[in-house]
Structure formats: C-alpha cells, structure tokens
Length: 187
Image 1 (cartoon, one colour):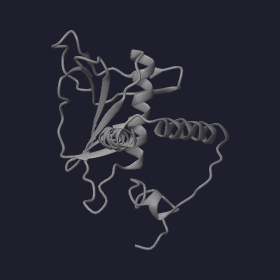
Image 2 (cartoon, one colour):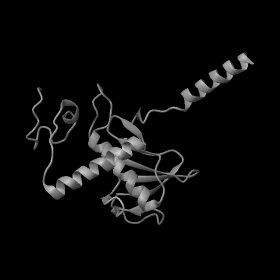
Image 3 (spheres, one colour):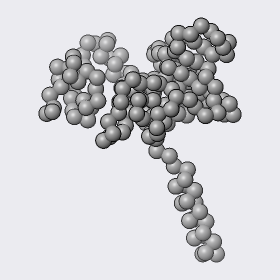
Image 4 (cartoon, one colour):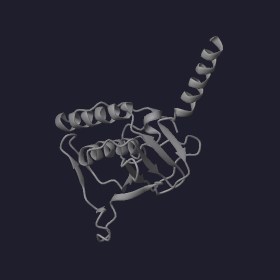
C-alpha cells in the first residue's frame, strides 16, 4: 500500500511539472497561430474575406476602453480568441521580456475581446523583431491592467499624479530620453 502511494505521489508531481507553463513564454518571432483563422485585422485592406473584420475600432463600454489589435485569431477546435500585436522594435538579448507598456496594451485587448466577442482569451502574443512572447491572460495581469486603467482615469480626472521613477520602470520606457523630466537614474 505504501509503494502505491509513493508511485501515485510521484506521478502527480510529474504531471504537475508538465502541466505548468510560465505566464510568459519566450519564442522565436512568428506571425501566425497554428490551427487558427484570422477573424480581425487592423490592416487597411478591402474586405476580401467576408468572415474577417477589417480596420475597425473595438470598443468596450464595460471597461471604458477602445483599441485596434493588429490581429485576432480564433482557434478552430476550441473557438478561443488570440490577439496578436506586432511591434517594430527589438528586445534586449540580456533580458528577453516584453515592455511593460506593450504588455498592458495586450491586457487591454484581452478585456476588449472578452467584452466584444463574449469569450475571455486564454493567451495573446507580442511579436517583436527578434522575439515572440506568448502571454497568458492571468488574474494577476488582469488586476494589474484594471488598476492601471483606474489610475489613468483618476489622473485624467484630477490632473494629479504620482511619479515613481526607477531603473526597472524606466529602462524600457519610450519616454525615457525624450519627454520625461524624471529620467534621472545613472546611465
């Protein structure tokens, strides 16, 4: 009986190990999604495919956001939606992780798709020149984007905002060396 419990425990640990995937996976850049069709694109093409929505702003009154993902794919079997956002920049090989602003943009697309299409996406993709990140739509990411949206609304309503410059927050910010008056960490 003890051997049976040991074997079952071992199998459970092995299964859990193979089930776990990190919230963000790093891959080589690739545009398409296997076993999926395009249902939305921000491309300004003429409506060549009647089953694809072209160049239309998606809007959510529930979350108070609007946006235009580059592509939305739908899996053939599960019918799940996968937003794909293309980025023209490159990611540092030292720390291959997506920019926080791009991650928040993808998280907003998760909210938009959930409201517009009625189905919460399980994942999305950020495709840079040198890396692709498969990002899970986790509770943590959802809380983070909802909190960020609330902070942005408060800032717009009151005109007040708190600045918290730091190396971690500023290192990949697009405003760092252009319009930011708070960029002060040593170079």
